[in-house]
Image (cartoon, rainbow, N blue to C red):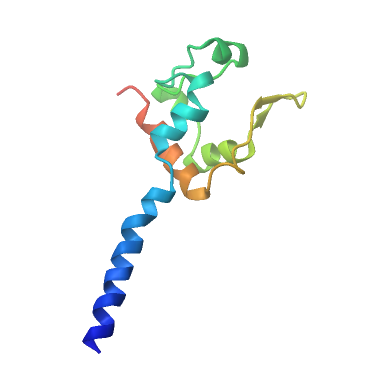
Length: 113
């Protein structure tokens, strides 16, 4: 019995340790997919950000206007203006739910204290 348990435990530990390698880091996802509009710091001071009129993610007052669930939904589904024009593309096909949750958590760290 012990001979079977030890390899099974070792395999489980290996799989748990390997899991994070399959998921991109939230900061990397931000840098690769969000910073071109929202800026590396989240303030939105980029040419694309000004054109799209992105909100300042470093502003605690702005961050207080949305829940984590609302942010996740917007990341997943994208954002359109009242005329139906795309303001932010949807990332639901690119990011898993876990990636989106991690990205929302990262966004919360951008606000100035």
